[in-house]
Image (cartoon, rainbow, N blue to C red; front, top):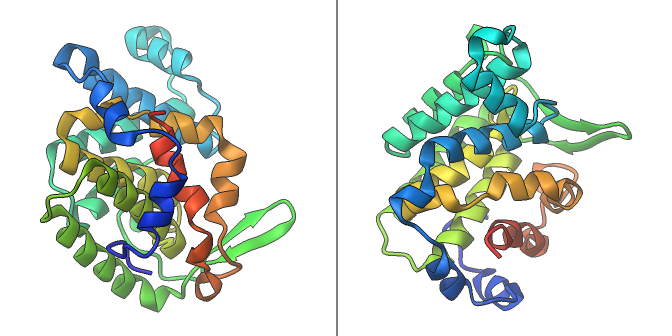
Length: 253
């Protein structure tokens, strides 16, 4: 499955139960309304919450405004690193080299230095209390799959896409990245950042008004369930991808 593939586009369009273009056009995208700095912080908090970070948005913002009254905490630093990665995405083009730089930034608190911003060289699985739920592709194939992924990203970035196509391909990019699972840790955070980064490249600052990370956090069970399309990389059945592809578009509903 390539992220440029339109195989599921019509089925996805039919499943979207509202006028996406009209809804998107109705959002207030004035500079004053966007408040990109706060939106980046909120995105980082909700994305970190998905990975088990217990710091809520109110607590994090209070740590920012009253920093000298707060003791440094790993959980706060973890979110601050992710905010820095979002800021990096805001200021830089989306490409493979910059993704690795962004991962190095976001993983400063969660990985040892030798593994920050580098693809994994070991087998990697996704585990739940019941056991192994997904076995990612072998490490020797990760670089090749990521090269292929960014060839597709480059192609999509060069095209004039409709609003619907932007949402469709951004969702596929998120899903495909998660399935490659290229890093030792931080894959979920990087996937959600990558999706927002693609939206930024296609929609400019308007992307900050899309509260996708909050929507995923608020619908965590269905978010994770819809990612699971097979027991391992080779068993993935993208015929069942529509429920996942609807999450991003439903975040503006």
